[in-house]
Amino acid sequence: MPNRPAQPGFETLAIHAGQEPDPLTGAVVPPIYQVSTFKQDGVGGLRGGYEYARSGNPTRTALETCLAALEAPHLPDAVGLAFASGLAAEDTLIRALCRPGDHVVLPHDAYGGTYRLFTKVAGPWGLHVNPVNVTDIDLLRKAIVPGRTRLVWIETPSNPLLSIADIAAVADVTHEAGALLVVDNTFASPYLQQPIALGADIVVHSTTKYAGGHSDVVGGALVVADPEVGATLAFHQNAQGSIAGPFDSWLTLRGLKTLGVRMDRHSANARTVAEYLVEHPAVSQVFWPGLPGHPGHEIAARQMRDFGGMVSFRVAAGEQAAVDICGRTEVFTLGESLGGVESLIEHPARMTHASVAGSPLEVPADLVRLSVGIESIEDLVADLAVALDG
Ligand SMILES: *Cc1c(COP(=O)(O)O)cnc(C)c1O
Image (tube, rainbow, N blue to C red):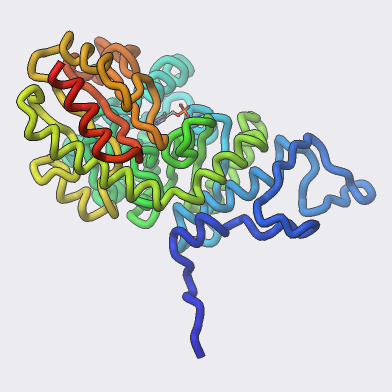
């Protein structure tokens, strides 16, 4: 007798987890429940547990169930939560799990908005934040204050320099000190990397990026391994209220269905682009974890399925030349954000990372960041060739 596998594969979960056909009509895609309140069958007689759409909405539930299944397929009690943006998810996490006086370790090359939230919003409220090079486990160990460090936060690959932290090693050091490990998995997506299986306690996403994948929705998510911590975060999601709306949830869920095939193509195109840039005389350094010379290459090869679609490079002729290149591409659109099907180019020092100028997170002024999309690779390489040759 043939058997179906006990554990469905990633793409099957992406298309089906939380997305059973609608019980009323058989619609194969979860409908957009554009509604704020639900009829009760007698006081307290909730149908399916829904009473008010901040507390829960079926379209959001479908997304949250799918996200938990994709990040932690081995943990049926993992909790997925969807938010209005990545930063809304982070803000909820901070206020749910940290108290004034607590200490948090952040990567020295954290996403600028994360750094701003921790230092400018949570800082004045009493949180102590310490930016550290989290690729160096000894530095990380020294930065952790046992008893006071509540969270160790990492991003791998990081933005915009694509540095790689060893998730399993960081988890060990974090747990020895009684802290929780949070991994921002936005750049890799759960298709390329599943931090919870490597020891992370909580995964954070800007679903605006690869999860949504089409540059048409802003959203965020948390996936929590421990259901008790998950319940605390779910309480705060409702109490603070920065939820994902039904249409945004639906768009994100639609994006997730093709995450696997998109990430394969993003990674393949990024490989060709990175290998092209390495050979180009106008380029002094290329950052892509799939390159054998990248300092995090071996760790990335161990903990990721492939190396993703983000590539950064430094321009030998300096800042103005880097800015000029960003203005000369046509297939690569000049713009912030990343992770959509269309390729984007940007100058981090003047755009996404302008807010961290003068801080430990400052990025090189001659750096260009690419979000390599899934257009025809010949067109992407030709576009860069024209832009680089000026
Ligand atoms: C964009 C981004 C965020 C913030 O997410 P928003 O959806 O813009 O609020 C957090 N982390 C990383 C790595 C990001 O790229």
